[in-house]
Length: 49
Image (cartoon, rainbow, N blue to C red):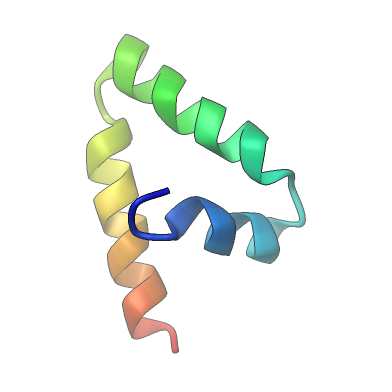
């Protein structure tokens, strides 16, 4: 939501943006790797233009 990763990923995958945001929050709370994944996807988003 902050860097636009969820919106970008929802357009790429064709999924609902709310589902992706919930998945990021769950991965941060339960698994702890959501923040790193978010930053990696942000870098991919930047360099894929």
